[in-house]
Amino acid sequence: MSSILKQLQQQFSLALVAAFGEEFATTDPLLAPTNNPKFGDYQANLAMSLAKPLKQKPRDIAAKLIEALDVSDLCFPPDIAGPGFINLRLKPEFLQSQLQQIQGSDRLGIAPTPDPETVVVDFSSPNIAKEMHVGHLRSTIIGDAIARVLEFQGHEVRRLNHVGDWGTQFGMLIAYLREVYPNALTEADALDIGDLVSFYKQAKVRFDDDPQFQDQARHNVVKLQSGDAETRQAWKLLCDQSRREFQKIYDRLDVQLNERGESFYNDQLPQVVQDLNDCGLLVEDQGAQCVFLEGYQNKEGKPQPLIIQKSNGGYNYATTDLAALRYRIQEDEATRIIYVVDAGQGTHFAQVFQVAQRAGWLPENVEAVHVPFGLVQGEDGKKLKTRAGETVRLKDLLDEAVNRARTDLQARIEGEERSETPEFIEEVAEGVGISSVKYADLSQNRTSNYVFSYDKMLSLQGNTAPYLLYAYVRVQGISRKGEIDFESLTDSPLTLSEETELALAKHLLSLSEILDEVAQELLPNRLCQYLFELSQKFNQFYDQCPVLQVEEPLRTSRLVLCDLSARTLKLGLSLLGITVLERM
Image 1 (tube, rainbow, N blue to C red):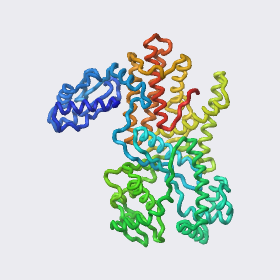
Image 2 (image 1 turned 180 degrees about the vertical axis):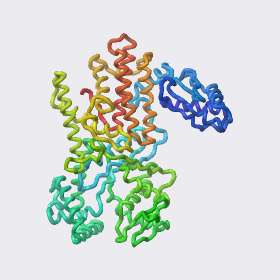
Image 3 (image 1 turned 30 degrees about the horizontal axis):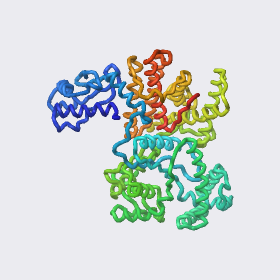
Image 4 (image 1 turned 45 degrees about the vertical axis):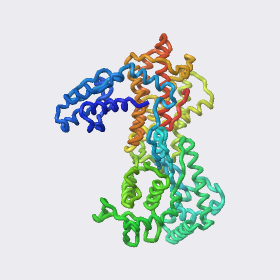
């Protein structure tokens, strides 16, 4: 079923041709939902934009469009406001018929895209031998939400985890462990991940201060790159251990990823250099092979180079990212490549994309886009850290959210004088805690920093996960109290007469428009805002319109509205990676 917006746009296209000729068949009607219900439900603003090419007054253009516009099945007669705005108000009968069409659909009537693409979403990307910290939270859950929405729309999505599993840090860590804990290089899980991180930090200090140790580390890198069996085995053990720790976090967050780390592209790096040289893009500068970039200058005002190969023959992040980008286009055949990486990497990606375009690897029909996000801040407005000044481990952050959710739940159970099993308490605490962390992040515009607050994110009031989850639970409570089997209500007729019923119905039918926006603009907070407003409109409807107490057929009609609200919440939250609860 097409969205209401698309149905209206189609009718406007026909009206434009009828009124002004075929050359206007592809003209954008500039149609959008109104901000104020007193102006109707949708407003078309194209009359003003056509005034100059048609050499007519906007209101006259609007009048001709209305005369040619056939929306009688959808709307009341359109009206003209101001200089030429065309206002449209949907008919209750049309809303009823649309809701009845989606009752039996597990996709709520939203058809998959007719033009599916192969999309790569590159997200999370922790480093081996380090624990995931709060800095990985945003990339992981924003990337997962974007992937879920695109998958729901019918695109083939490759969820890639570009982990840092190669380079100097391994030579450094292997050299240090060989001295202080050699068993870690030959035995699986000889060290706890926390101890491994501690050794990594000590190795970094040693590397920075000891030239001889630097030589040992670099020698290990050479051995690793050349395929030395002992060094490769040590590297594999360290990677496997970190990978298992990462998976515990991903399982808890319900995030699916396919790992394809930096090491995957290692054998392709010489060819990247060769091909760039063959394209005539490489310039030697102080012994390094570089591409000088258009539009970028160094501090001296000279063209800034992107180093492709270091003077010592080594490679860097740019080389690996170029290899990855080329592989994703040529081998994965992706037509859209999305990098969910912090805002600080914006210049890096712009430079990599420029080089790829100039080399002919990134054609016009492939979109490569950096999806930036801001910092997670503490209550003091600074980067979130522990009291000791350390970066907050993601595991600790999630544990604290679940612990606080458990405390709140136990207090509520006590206050309501009800009894619940330990299993119920743990399930709800984990669900609410994890969902609250996810939603608090996703509900922010990703380009902004945001202040992390357990109290706000766990609140039952406001734009929070608990508020949305409770709206869903409320409908399940209606089902239990009235012994209602919602599935038996499929194809039941609806009657919409009250203002809160109409407002809720219109909102329910706009989900596909919101998902199109999220898929295009890659802003999950748009979906969060939609679900928050849905919860508000449902609660207003529930407070003002009795459900179980009214007579038939109104009782069944309102039960269907309740069910559609719950199913829309469930679907929308699932696209954010959040699982609903039947009781709280």
